[in-house]
Length: 344
Image (cartoon, rainbow, N blue to C red; front, side):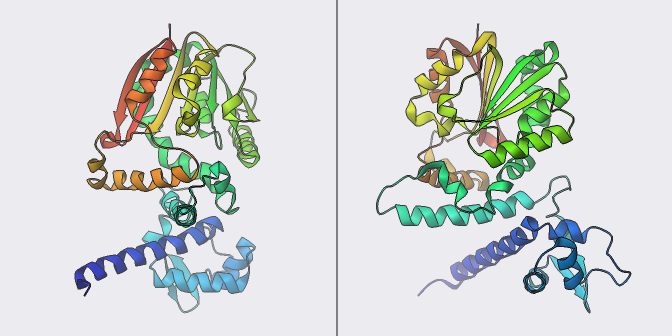
């Protein structure tokens, strides 16, 4: 007989997952953002007017409204709809928005299903699994930006004087696996003497990065290119090479080889700045904190793509073998790390 307390806990988890699935539908169709706007009529928003404003099917929107009311994302008085405080937290334009949590929940469900099916064969289909759900990929970059952009600005950059000094004197920064270009946009917005090149394997990401750079007035200093991280080339010496949650995607070809290739592109005094989840030295730590538990699942999802998370010593050893001096910055209760290599 299953303990009723355990059953209740699991059912509560299931309800939370369903709430995030409903929220994700609203996020991907910009319904929360629409509901925060002025309604088209004095009587307020209805399912019909919301569907028309969002250019979505009325029947689907009506069913989504029912589910959102049930899970406390919307409130309804007669036919009139409004956001609850919880629903408003999923708007894409509010600081600290919860929309990345909803996107990650649906992506995690996809990766769990793929891992379950592949476990019998051992197959690792690679990064292509991210393209199997066309609704998810366009949100991957915004999800990372909303999740990690504030940490970069508030915690990481102030703790990296070498990067600040480079920004002030100017030079070329390259972001490998740039996604929607958020890292370079934030870096170049702060340091007007910098130029940037972003490389990513997905054409949709490159197009989104270019649009965002132009919208930010940075298009003249930012160049985004589609390409393979395993074989990147830049025609001039680089002052900073950044890899944000991307190094583990190429580590399988050999850490020493990867770092030697990066060092070969650096100008004297150039930097390699690697930001990665920090895999714990003791796996027992994975059960001690919600963030680390999430990392444990993500590492399973990474295995589907042929990757694994890394420990800082693995990265510093490869950097030092390539002739770089190293330093390690750990953040978020040890769940995140930034490893800096300098080619002197």
